[in-house]
Image (cartoon, rainbow, N blue to C red; front, top):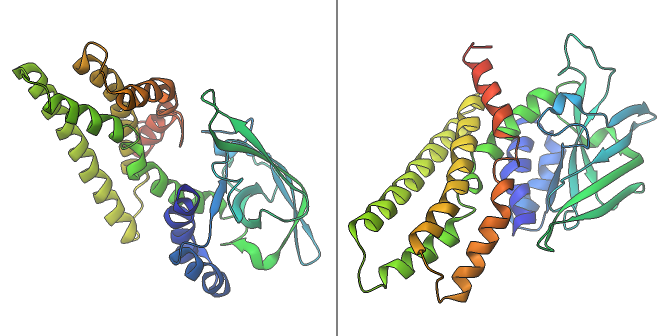
Length: 292
């Protein structure tokens, strides 16, 4: 599900906005049918929230490009059919760091592609390191225009940062906790008010996310609003873990609920890091408001 979800959430809108007709004909029916899995090759060992620091290079060659570099934290690459790779196609201009970037559609079984797992402390495998060693990409698999990668990526990231996964990571924990609290013989006013506030925040975040989705569907530029969803949503996720633990008080007898709480505590620090750190996104918002 997650492997297809990236294709549905980010690749499909990118194809509609920037892809050529052959790319759309080839990929969109497979995405709609749930048969195309994709990963996003943006972050690198030295370029996470600051994507302008990307070092992966694409060098012109006969009939296409040669990709060389390393991507990391690439979610679902071990299940994906292809990776959308952000690479530098011209030297860095210190005065215009965002210029000279382009995107490529790279099949995961291409010669020179090596995918290695990045295993979490819990033993789960979601992330990967992906090495591109002179991987040939034909001109037909360039996504959008050469040199226009930054504008394209900024638009794609708005889908990622404003999506429901930015505030629903702890939803299974919240739902399980509310059900347990509802089954207790007595629920005092403090607990009832806290649960009400928790659900009000969740509903408000959903409304904000939906409003950004509508704006994106209309072709509007909403990088600031998307960053706001991500900032508020991931803070909510972190705070909800602590709030649920406080509401439950003594250890719950339900082992499934305890497992959810342990997982929430383990993943809690990650919520504000993925998709760009909240600190960097606040700088993005400040710049968009003319404050920087």
